[in-house]
Each structure stands twice: as C-alpha cells, then as structure tokens.
Length: 221
Image (cartoon, rainbow, N blue to C red; front, side, top):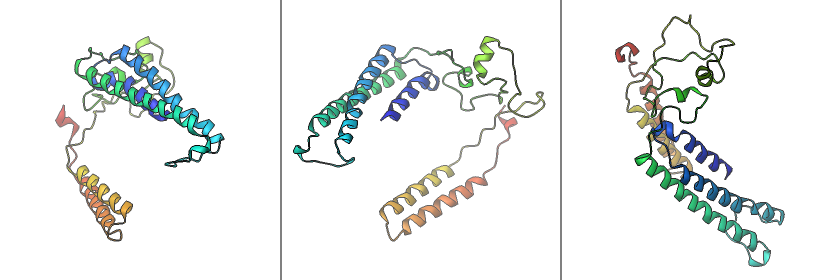
C-alpha cells in the first residue's frame, strides 16, 4: 500500500517534466488528503486484526471471530482509496489536456533532468553532460564552485554526442516471446512446450536485434 502512495507522488513530481504541463494544485491537495485518509483507514486496522489472530489472504471468515469491526473500517478506507484514485485520474487527464505550461524547472529542482525542455526530446541531452557536483543542476544554477573529480572520462575537450538507436521491430518479437513463454510456464500448456516455443522466439528476437546496424551519431546532427 505504501509503495502505491510513493508511485503516485512520483507521478505528480515528474508530471510537469514528461507532459510539459502543470497539474491542478488544489485538486492535487484534495487527492493527497483523501488518499492519506483512505490509506490509513485501510491498512492501520490490519495491525489490530493481525494481533487478534486473523490470518492474511483469506476470502471469508466466520462472523463470531471478532474481526468484523476492523474489517468494516478497512472496507470504508478502501472506498476512500478508490475515490482518491478517481480524483487522481481526473486531475492527470484534465491537466494533460488543459494544464498551464510548466516550463523546464517548475520545482527549482536539483537534478539534471530539469535542465532540459519539458517534455524532453527523445534524446534527452544533446551532449553527454559532465557532472562536477552531486546536485549538478542546483550547483550550476547557484553558481557554486565546482569541487571533486568530474564524473566521466575524456580530456574535457571532446564532444560526446548522444547515440540514438534506429527504430526496430525486434523488441516487439522479444516481448511476444516473453508473453508466450510466461503463459506456458504459468499454465503448463502442452507440458511446457508452449513455454519452450516462447523462449525460442525471444532468443531469436534478441539475436537478430543484436545484429541490427548501428547508426552514426554524426548522421543525425
């Protein structure tokens, strides 16, 4: 449960970067408090249920076990969680369509992804950045004196262009092989024959993918 809250928080944090738009802050705050209430109402009573001896992951239990109250509270919390996800989806969809322009660095952030346009180009950085500080973008904005050893090799005079691979269909073939192989392993179809076929398809995809021509970065400049 806690990991879901962290994921939602991460989406809110990086939403301006990958969409180029700001979300509705008032709805975002409402989303937080409803999810906060729902998360605690759902999962905190489970501590008491565990202390009372209720086993995990059972689909039903007798009403005379004394677990009704806290399970009822948890069910109410789950309803709040459901509402919070509906608020989240509404905020994301409407903000993606009609949100204000976010700019490159709306949070006055520390890390390098906030130094490039929002949304970022497919190559991210035109050249590989040389990092002199743990919080490189923050230090550059504040004009801090560089200290330590720069991360990355080279003489400092070389230009390292970003390499972009050419479009390829082979990753799709690899994915299809993984799906077929996983299905065969889970359901033991044809005595794992389906799984073997999926693995073979995936290996063929990886092998062919490795022999695709590599484009020259200079060609894309």
